[in-house]
Length: 123
Image (cartoon, rainbow, N blue to C red):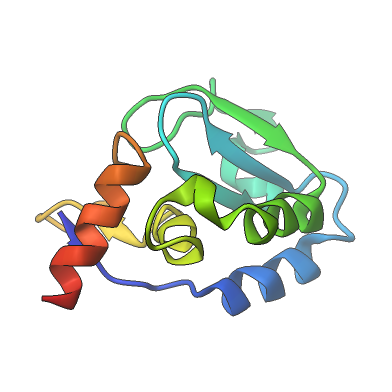
């Protein structure tokens, strides 16, 4: 696995601000992993029709919210939930920040796995 922060927290907040006016945009988060993403509506449709059950990169079913600011604020207010690297682990779990060795976006099993990847990066 490779950690390369392509979207910082500031980038994510700016994207949330841009998507806020779009009623079809959503913030999705995986049921079985810490993975999450801000999604414009075209991501889950083909020609305006749903393209199947949306999942995280490893197939976990997603939950969603339109309350982008509340989701991010909750993370900032509960840093201990994400382990020793706090908000850095939360941001690392954002779509595309962790990839397989082959370069494909992926998700890790839990916050400890994201924290361990952050530890490796600091070595």
